[in-house]
Image 1 (cartoon, one colour):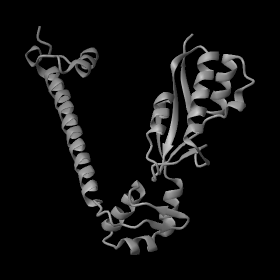
Image 2: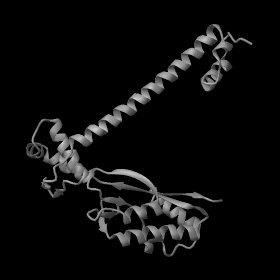
Image 3: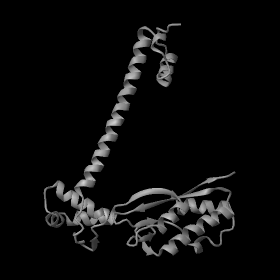
Image 4: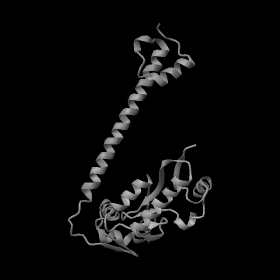
Length: 228
């Protein structure tokens, strides 16, 4: 049966199933609306493809513009020493080139802004605790681990021990699935930052629900799924 009248229910059906419907089954305003929805979807798909290609081009441009010779010296900016192998160095040198300035002139004119960026900038990511432990083990030698975020540097064995301990306590005391997620931050030096409790903070908690409530209150960056 040919559908011509565009009712509210047909309109909703077209929105949800436009890719499955056949043009020959429609006429009039219903056919016009189906073509309109298909056209909009096609436009969105093309726009998404274009955006993806542009992002790829920007990434390639970034990599080519910050290609280094290997002879670069570390930059001293306030209390920071920026190694040429770090992401921070790449961002600084690219910014200088975008302004058509020498690296020395750009740093001199923007020292306070660069220092603030180095102090504050973090990219946050969520990971399962076992995966984060693996990542810490595989960090480059120069990378550091800070607990809490922007806190004191911890040795890798200590950081791994803290992560292993909190997951072990949660698994033993609480009814949760065997995955515990934690949000952590990476700075422009490739250093890793995260909040995690010390074992002595929860050693006296013996009830699973009490432990989960305590984690929710004090460490919202640690998440889990209850197995009720």
